[in-house]
Image (cartoon, rainbow over all chains, first blue to last red; front, side, top):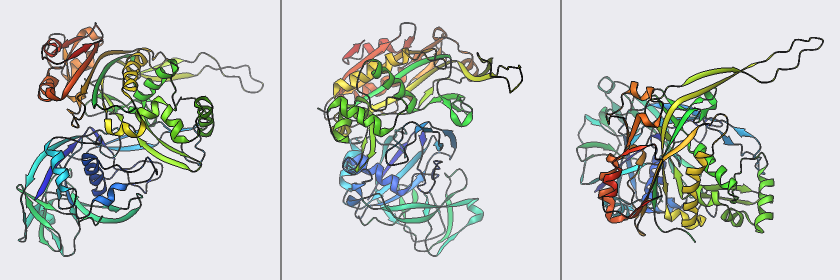
Length: 242
Length: 303
């Protein structure tokens, strides 16, 4: 079974960790950010109160698998925010910096979740429209609204060609129908972090170049895990091992 | 003692002939969504308004806005609070209890997610932005051997009128870590209103709070209505929806009505979970749906 919910806000910024002064965003909710949202819904403390860079919830994601689709056309908003410069160990507050921020405007995502130890708790919280910690999209001031779509039976897709409705991990043996897809973009997104927020693994993904919301047509699925969920073709990221 | 009930807040204020929040990347032009012509206000600006009011009220605030190093500020607060560690000192400060803090000094490094978060504020209508120039008061010194002294020009942006709505949420679970209390939340409500009235710097004159609505849920409730700022609209004085043009032409509160009717359906749905609703209003503002809200059978406190 698969749980499906949507998350939306006015702004989002999923910061690329390797950008230095300017805050550049991934074009959509990354799997790691989806993990954070799920942890907020079920209420797993990240442990940052003890250690600033802790992300303790990663222990709980054993067996959980997600897929993500973009439901609002991709649009950007660029601005600068006045922040205290906080660079060296003794934290000089005299100086301010105005780093550029790249935001996604009016984002809406659909998140599909299957398997794992958190599934039952997540389902219970979603059904009661609860969210233990305040959900947001990448930055705390992008407070988000979550709407539960439902729980769906999934059916494994074996026959191709098909139109895939989600962001698609680039799998071995995958063959695109580029004519029908129109435009397809590629991005490298983080998939796994450890409990100290260290980067462990990223994956190359494909998304529609038509405002990121359109389907991508494939001729061969190769090793891609593909399911039919509530009338949509969903491409899964690999399961987290926790 | 942390608070036990979740709260949602909606705050509406008016800006006249001032700059709500300049974008440093764009010559301090008000933050602006070119597609919708709405002005935006960052959460940092809103929290500055609140902190400045707390400082006027002699409350203990960590980020006091003064130019000093973190080390110096921490030393000052240690002295004031007679506490030693970063965690102990931060637990004494009203702003860090409510808004959270990332603290990294010496060997102590921790991060508290603030129980209170604000979204960026946004105007409820299309707004025009004026570019104004003026002469500066003082001339610069003439160059060596020359008598010539020159005045320079100053440039600034102003919006003639903008009604801005801000949404915030207070999360009881996050308050367990920071120790934010119900009294702290009451201090936040007061400071949002008074702090906005007291924004009397050159670029922020005039700012006026006009409407405030806070939903206090019953203990144990872990849901939310969400995005209260999107569940209100602005109407013209006759009660018709504003077009882009009529939105741009607004110049005073008397030319419009705040419509909270879209929010009432959600309040009805969530009413079994609502303990109390606090409403505060500037009498100049007409609020469509206020009478209906009063008659919903909710416990309403009007301040």
